[in-house]
Length: 133
Length: 306
Image (tube, rainbow over all chains, first blue to last red; front, side, top):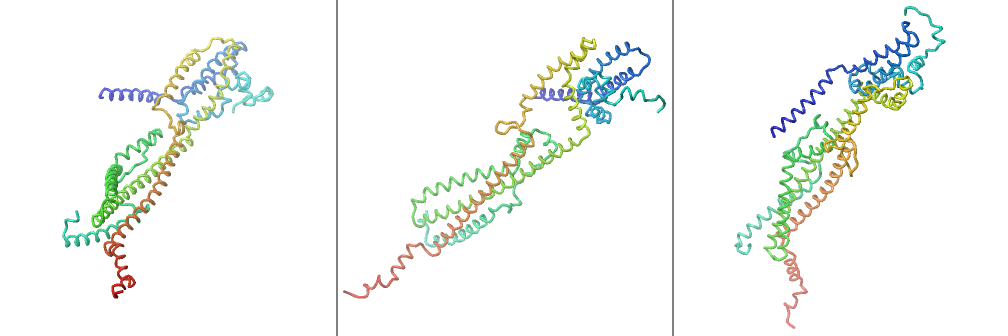
C-alpha cells in the first residue's frame, strides 16, 4: 500500500515536471520562429543583393522551412495558452501568417499570395515612390 | 390476560386507556397535519452538502456517486436507515396482531385493538419522521445539483469568454484549414525540386500514428468514460439535468406518499375515536338490548294474563 502511494506520488511528480517544463518555456517560441522566417522570406523578395536565380533557390528553401514552421505553429497548443496579442493576430490574419498553406488554397505561389492579400500589383508598385515613412 | 384483573384494576385500566386513546387521537391528528411538507422538525439529523470546486471538476457520473457516498455517511442517512429498521419491526408486530385479533372477543379484543392502535400510531410517527428526512434530503440534493450545474455553466461561460479560449478556437479553425491543403502543399514541394521531405514531416507522421493509438486507449479507459443514460453517451450538463429530473420525480412521489400518510393518520384517529366512544358508551349490542326492553310493545304481555 505504501509502495503504491509512493508510485502515485512519483507519477504525479513526473507529470508535474512535464507540465512545469512546458509552462516555463516560451509559449510563443514556434510562432516567433515562423515570424523570423517569414521576415527572411519577404526580405528575399525585396533584397537587391540576389539575382533572379539565387532569389528563386533561396526562396524555395525558405518555403520548405516555412511549411514545417507553419504546421508547428498550427499544432502548438501552448500558443493559445500564451494569451498574447501576437498569437491572436497570427490566427486572425491567416492569409498573411501562413503564406504557404494559404497560397496553396488560392493556387498561388506564397509570394504571389502575399502580394495579392495586400493588394500589391505591378501598377501600384510602378506608382510608388521610395522614401522615408 | 385481562381476565385475571379485578374489577377495580379493570376500571383503572379503562381510565388509563381512555387517556391514552385521547393522546393517540391527538397524535394521529398532529401526524395528519405534519404530513404536509414544509413543517420540518428543526432538531432532525442534518446533512450539509457543498458544491465545492473540487466536486465540480469531477466527471458528472462520479459527482453523483460522490454525493451519494457523502449522504450515506451523514447523520441524516443513518437516522433514515435506523427508521427503516424500526418501521419494519412495527409492521411485523401490526401484522401479527391483525392475525390474532379475529380469535379474540370482548375485553381481550378491545385491548388488542387498543394495542394495535398504539403500534399503528408509533409506526406513523416513524413514517412521518422518515418522510420528513426524505423530503429534506431531496431538497438538499436538488439544491446541490442546481449549484453544480450553475457553477459548471458559469465555468463554461468564463472559458468561452476567455481570450486564451478565443485564440485556441482561432488556432483550431486555422489548423483545420491547413489540414485541407496539406497534401497539395506536400506535392508542391516536388514542383519546387525539393523532393526530400523534412525530418519534421517524417517524424511527425510516425508519431501521429502512435499518438492516435494512445488517444484511443485514453478514450476507451473506464475512468475517462463519459456518463451514459440508457447506454447513450451524454454531456455532463445533460447528465446533471437528468439527475435533477430524477429528484423532481422522487419529490412528486413523496408528495403522494404524504397524502397516504395523512389518510393513514386520519384512519388511526377515527379508530381511536371509535374505541373511545365504545369504551365510554358501551357497544351496540348493549344498546340494542336496552332498546328492546324499553319498547312498550315488547313488554305488554308482562302486564296482563290471557
